[in-house]
Length: 374
Image (tube, rainbow, N blue to C red; front, side, top):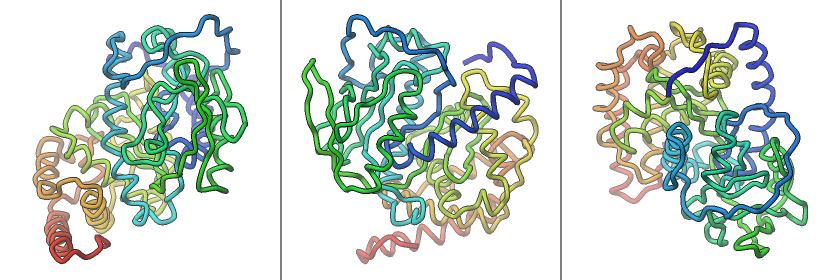
């Protein structure tokens, strides 16, 4: 995707301030409510909801399989890949995330306003999305899947409370669901499917409560601010498989679980970068050089490597090629590329010994059928 315009400095500061406030409010609810739902692409649209008019037919397949204009489809394909690869890492590692683990519903939902403002009309036309929230993805093996939630289901009510409509529906729905999730192990939902209302009881899914974001920029990097993880488009293009993408995601989840962003005093800086790069047309000035991010010390990076390998193994991902991937990244995107991944994580050589030792530990525990705990 090409940057179409560069906003003025004043516009960027105002946007980032408003977006940061909105994203923090929403993320506080989304982590406990809609699994993997986040404010990754939603713009601060304040227009009043339009009249719905004739109902459009809901989709019944993943959005990435449906025809849509190329820019919109690219966003959808990349987001679905991120969610799909991240899901087992989040659901299988609640024990390792500790304070960051929450009860989640096990699906994500969007309406037409969940996409960048440029694509609201396209989302409505291509996917049949309107003012109403519709289920986009259902996590394999989750309580939502077992209860029968399907992509395309329109959300009607939760414990008899109507789901909101319109531009702020995701945030408002999360606010409705958060107290229900905190106080119950089963959530009663009503969905509309084929013009019929269907009552469902959704068992909650325990998971790491980290939001996963897509960064609309070509630098090869990943960012974690303690609550969120963002993978850039450049990193998605760099990884050669879902296994390699899982390596990157797990390592950023591990940084969050270990509270490294706050210990490094870079949480606010990381949050600002994420809030900017999730825009369809981000300000690229914000990632010049190292963007004010202090490089992680080698002991932090090694600790994140060790925890991430346990997360990967528990989620069923391969771990044997971890060292080779990080070496390739170090060679092709060296620390001299200041807005690249290695500049923030320069201790590749030091980390390799930790990776080898941790893989040996994990394999020994697997062979002896011991719990995969660090």
